[in-house]
Length: 271
Image 1 (spheres, rainbow, N blue to C red):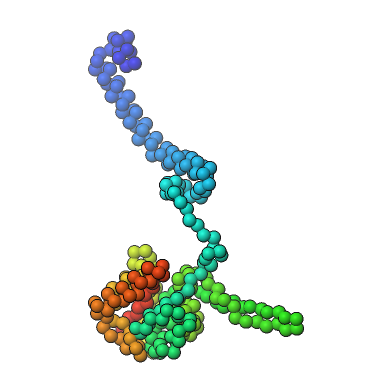
Image 2: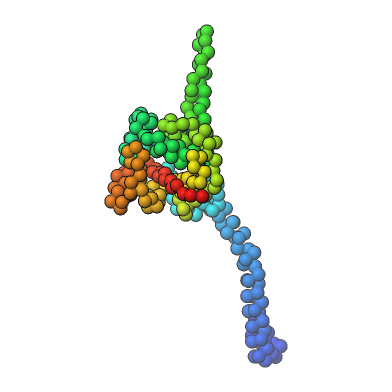
């Protein structure tokens, strides 16, 4: 069109190339202006079309961002809470003072644990947590009498923390009493980078000291520790060989059994 117009109007080649460059600049300007505005709309339309197409294949996607991932799935395994699972967790094994208890609620851990270890365990769980648990109540009505009993635990909050609170309440004292007696002075919440949560509480027996409690992924906390408690609450050096043994015999063993391993640690520091 440009060359035909140039011949008809008797234009010079310089004018033709000048107009051509002007058209190119105008086209680039339109693209630069239109693409940033229209690209999000085009992406949303494309994802919405994909969601509609997957819905016809019985693959319902609620979030557009997940359509690409769900569209590449070949099999979807799901579970309805209340059939296979209860949306509750429970501590099934506990390693304390070098004693490994496979059935926490059946093993007499409360009797063999030293008072010092019991106190640190209670504070490490109760103070370094934001969850709450409470006992339900069961009412039994007979023909002539009405009786009440203690029901199952009701969990509110992070399910892992609720399981630890339940264990502490069964083995030690009430977690609420411990939490009220040792209020937190500072808290570093759990995040995916640190993979641990840390809380600082004052030592009520020695106001010049504080307890720093942390809990998180077993391998992360284990690498930070320099000692571990053995019988009677005595703290001994945590050697490299012992670390390797704990990692192999507890963390890896539990992971192979689809169990989540949580490690609790503490440090006494002056104010």
